[in-house]
Length: 186
Image (cartoon, one colour):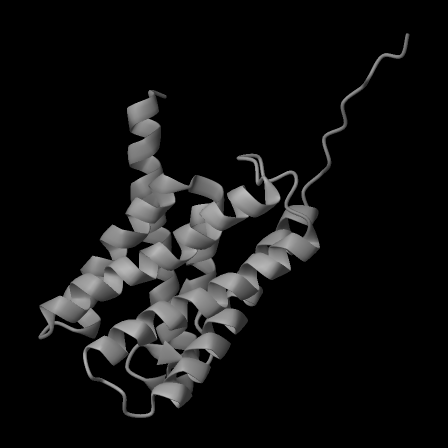
């Protein structure tokens, strides 16, 4: 597969999986919505972090496109500014956490040096960054009603959703057979 085709498939695949995760979240956790777009359990947050960890920039581009799509046509069809900025913030937060992990932990593309402790710290950092960036934007727009409560709900939702997705994937991967390599000794 050509390099360009691989990038294209990574972007489109991320957009599809993220959009599907939004649908699943709507089906399973509609009752847990604090306000429009803020849930006490938010599985798409986990897909955001997982996509950037696995696919880097391609994952971020796919997230941006999908975020814009759902913001413009579902969540905020009458607020183009919120749709644009919300999509950017939703993409910047997981990508920034991924880049931070590369800088601080020396995270490699293979993710081999992403220990359980580092993964948990990364999940926590992302779960703080996303609502923080969103709420800075809300504050700058003058939308300060119940801002502390909305921040808390978004933090808890992002944390819960990310932990569910990341550790579900980690558990599923542990079920795969381990491929052993034979090392010849001299």
